[in-house]
Image (cartoon, rainbow over all chains, first blue to last red; front, top):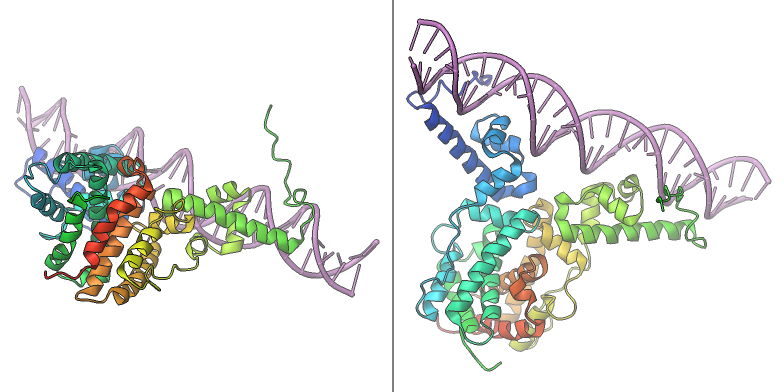
Length: 203
Length: 203
DNA sequence: CAGTTCGCTCAACGAGTGTAGAGCAATCTT
DNA sequence: AAGATTGCTCTACACTCGTTGAGCGAACTG
């Protein structure tokens, strides 16, 4: 019927058996989770603190209290264990290719929300761009070290660019032509291209 | 010295010999040019009409009068002759590869501001995303038709994804590892990878 | 040269944003 | 059980944004 006017959910009545610290932690997690999802879907600028708070079932001011500012919330939401270079412990080129395809989110069920949030905002939000550059350059370094050979860094940069491109088109733009193809087929088609960038040939 | 308090540049004193229609057109062009540059640099949401107007040396209200709304301005700024599929009149695979590398902005001196504006905003602005999908799918169709072979559409989609990825990383993120490599070298390194996606091999 | 047109600016509104401070009520302490 | 602590909400401020309508003055028309 008529919607209950939110019975003054004092943040207390629900979840009866939790301590104050536990409830605080639970709120923080809920906010972070909601923030990641919204940042991943709409990017930094279109995501409002009010929307995050509403999605988390919480007052906007609480978000400020926990994370200091919208930027602080974004930083926390995006900062997760920085994925080590996809080729950290790869022994041969085939393992490098496997690692790259894995980091694409083609295998498994997509990339984590935090990664999507960073990617979604990296073209419009300066801090996200800086973070993206940092992460990508680090991965390129690892990749270049693993591949060696002439122009290793340029090759590695192109490999990461390809990864970014496929991730962007598939996960963020959701191109039908990509979504309509099974992920293992995409990986299979992509594999020779990645191999071609790893091979040393007389250019 | 102290800056002149803008001597009431009535839009008339300057450019003495132009007719009203000519001045109107000149204003429109200036606004569009400023808009393209700002949209390309900061994306849709961070670009304000006030900033565009200031960059064009014009009152914000004039922008509204010319383009109706911020969205209208963006649409006009981004709508340019849709680039025909990079492989429209390609005869063999090598010409397809050339066309792809060309549409990357690696050759010449980068992509036009209108393309950069669309790319910059395509992850955060729904209209830009729709436009990007439309353009990319069209190019994929043309590419798939030119390449034929098994799974042609998936291959074409991956080719466009690679193009997008390199363009994003090079033109928008400005990754040092890419900017530090001559563009012809990047093209040369990329070529075998693109070829690998065009070749039909038993997968 | 008088009257009209119109490109343009000025000033302002209303909505939405990030953010800060006061206060409540449930939990923790003694 | 009384007091101190604190997670949380309410209210509101200051600001910026897109957008609008009135009006000015130069360019056009006769």
